[in-house]
Length: 129
Image 1 (cartoon, rainbow, N blue to C red):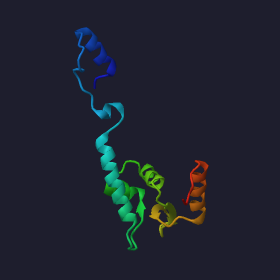
Image 2 (cartoon, rainbow, N blue to C red):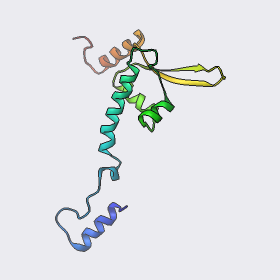
Image 3 (cartoon, rainbow, N blue to C red):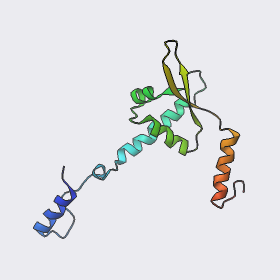
Image 4 (cartoon, rainbow, N blue to C red):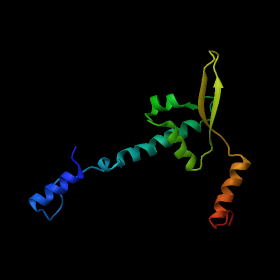
């Protein structure tokens, strides 16, 4: 992998004044546009799974990693929460005595709604205009 300093020194040696010779991909600078698009589709698939009306509408972190290929399930859930979805983490104990944590989609509590309205009002906006 080339470093930015290598490219700049190459430019100065060759006295190139036009565009750089080596075009770096977005992933070199920490931004991968393909994964952002994929992340949006994965987030929508996870949200669709959690929104199902059937009894099996909960997801564990292991299932998110294996089925949807999510590297960091808690970060994905946090992004969905920031988008305004009320996703809860519940913990149960199996018959083997192992604790299993799983995510589920629920209705926001009155306390959550009140906190959201208070945050909007702190920004100087009216909640219900």
